[in-house]
Image (cartoon, rainbow, N blue to C red; front, side, top):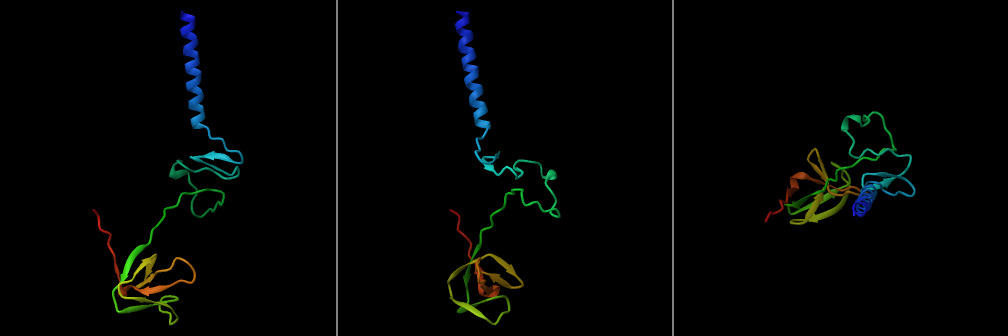
Length: 138
């Protein structure tokens, strides 16, 4: 009877240990495991490593994968009768016209100007012609 119980215990332990090892080891066919995914063999995995061991910004290592913070654009509304978008801040070249009440995405602001295009060609509007649209919380 004790032999049977020992056999069941050994089987249970071996099954549980194999499940544990499989959940921690990732099978990467072309690279090596890094976090929840795989990276190339020549790259260095920096996920969940202390910030003090990260290389300084003066040394650029293109083989390191870093997490980036996604910045969403802010929504603004045209408050004047109309606004001409410019190719650059203080540029005389107009790239488009926006009507009063129209909403635009603002990606960055600088010196009283707002960049409303995230692609080329860039479009800029005077910040004085815009008002931020605040989202309503329920």
